[in-house]
Image (tube, rainbow, N blue to C red):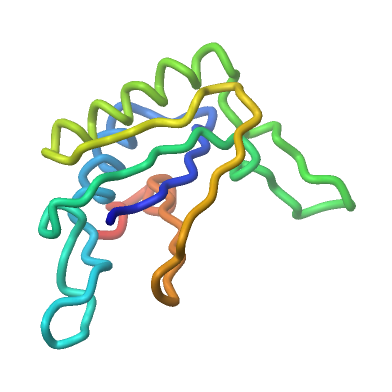
Length: 131
């Protein structure tokens, strides 16, 4: 049991973003406890994270009919940052498996429950990211 995280790295991301995201993924309480509420993190359940590089998550559809990927980090740099993110999550004590960067992958998951979240480390810029 664990989490599947589809990851897009964006131009302007910083080491602070990676640290925040690593901690957020490891400690976010999304698994049910005895009360049925989301009380446990992937660490609490001794789960793992499948980290999947997916630049299309960076797609913006504000204008026109074709998504823009202009804000996505350049592939050669994004590959390095993706590995750094995996290490940040491992540094929190979570087992991490990764998809293949730049490959066309088929990912299957069993979504056990009605929860899909978007984490954006940039949302809090100018202040503090969501705590």
